[in-house]
Length: 312
Image (cartoon, rainbow, N blue to C red; front, side, top):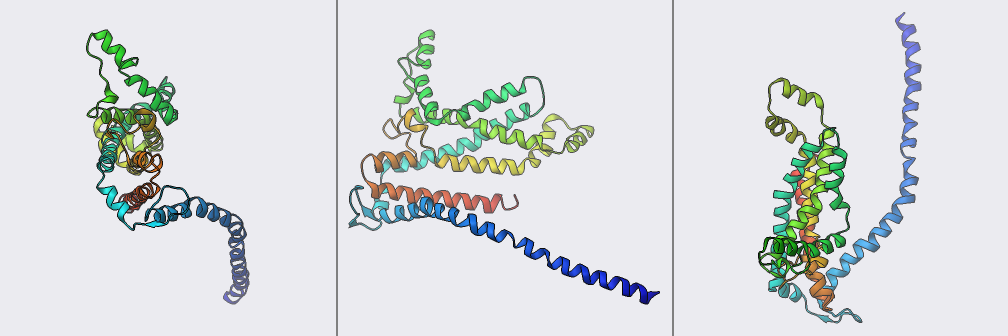
């Protein structure tokens, strides 16, 4: 009996092995797809990303107005001028301040609203739409709207001051208050995006874990602190990552709102690049700003992902 079983099972095993080998060409069938779609993607990425980055690094070594070919080689002098410029140092501080406010105020506000709007209650969709609407609004439009709101002659602040009988504040004309006004607009504009991230994260949580915490007698704060927040760890890290990267690239809302003024008090690195590099035709200096911004973004992005998001 053992001989018969051995003779009957061995051919089946032998037939199974070639079948397993025949799967490998099917797996390699993706190679034509890769060869078809990868070269165009690499070509576009090289033309629109790699080459501009290389050109910016090259131009940062020259004093160049943008006309003709750069011929006046100055080495690292553009970077020396840059870090001695008070407006650029102010832009670095402002970018750091925006990052701090985004993490310390914007993200916690988004989590708080998400905890209230993640449940399926009546009218919750309307409230989600109201809070998410500022993010949908274009940055330039948001800047123009808030410039009118802050206007000391015809804006909403002027109307409120006139109603209360107090002096009209010219917020955007005060170099000590303008940046705080910009920070308020930033929180208003972007917290809805982070709120929707947390709502999506909360809706994907395992409900049995929350029910078990309720059965054990956990309060609402204890459920949030010890159950919900740890389970939202990956979403929280992603939200902070978006807040940091977005804060470094802030430009198109500040230009219609303040233009970087007054007295360069609301400059960011990107607005400084535009105001001092493009409009003043100092392409070499502007390219140096781009190089510094690129190094900061890459360092923070890869460092953050390696330290905090390695398991996500």
